[in-house]
Image 1: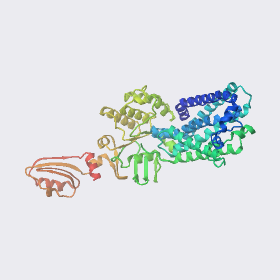
Image 2: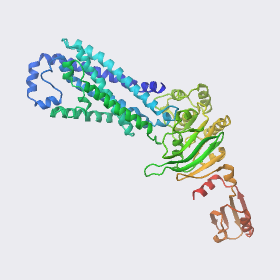
Image 3: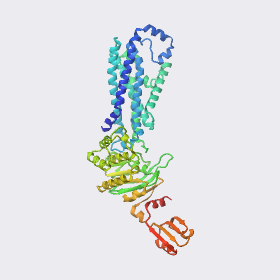
Length: 265
Length: 291
């Protein structure tokens, strides 16, 4: 309990900043929507000039872009990108923070099992993500309803927004594992940005070649927004992939963390 | 009962040396010195005991319990002061100490107050603002606040001024008198000499001697200095048992171990102006073991 609260306190400020940033980002993007929608023909004309592969790489779907949900799922790609950076930070920082501050000696000579330490840290990160998503979910729904002034299916919006949480779970899990494997991470933010960019580039590449080859490789491709809007539900394979990746990463993290030697600084 | 029992503990790190077949016991209530130069394997041994690192082979028990299987149970009664202390920045001293105390199943408030008063540690300061010596004090309080039955000190005095060092040793002795067993690693012999009952000497990852301080000192080694009326030939002291011979014209200094009569005969054959025969300090014995 002590470690959980301590960790929570450590990441509290960042959590609040991220929750506000993601919500503000959503407000900003949605505030563009009315202008977009009222100039539908002009925008369509402009987009015709670009090769279709490029448009799909940037998740631009001309057919749906002018509905609230279509526009939202386009801009949401970038919100998810930021959310992934946040989750990556949490994961990578979790254990490597102790290595950088050289506090592992302090923490790991206390009468507490290493798995308890890791569990407390994971739960604190999870709490941070849940908080972020609650704030984001409320904020995004409110913004979409008030700013766009157009009818749309709120359930679809919530389902779309919730994918942020699942993708963050994946990134926090991968980050945790990376933070344990690479004990000497110098800058958490840099590492997290690299991780997120790498997966993002892969997902752009996948959209570009349009073969769905990397569907299970990059977390940005786990959920298909068009399908979610159409079916008002997640594909089971999406959720299973999230579950599988998280389980493997967390399990490996525990194994490594419990077994590894903590060297003097 | 042995508080610490180490049996053939070996830890190898890829290419670099760790420790090899380290075995010794620390008995209840004693202050046990663990001596060796930097890199000899003192910290490796200690970190293995605390299960910060895992042994390649061999085993060890603390309070009769296995260091790996019963880790948390053991740590409940162990206080550890690492050679270099690092703590979470952006925290006040008292917050860190409370966080530390929260891991133990007892109320440590009074002890924190008592220790910080003795060490003149300001509990309200931020840890970031503390000097190295003051951080060390935080380490000491942190290591002792739960009145551990076993205190493990890894080169504890670095960064403390002589006055604080004296206070620190008084604290350690007081804890010892209350029943705590102490394992004290150091490369400074004089400090060990004054507080420890027994010592283990480690060299290149291997224990080369475990003995009482008094035995080590009494072990027939004498530091002998003579001044003769005429120059002393180098060959004159070519005798078994003499080491560290320093000749300077008519003066000679050396360490002698063995039958005293042999050296006395040799000395009496000289025309002496001055002679002194002293107990060597551990430093000299240590150099002797390290040759």
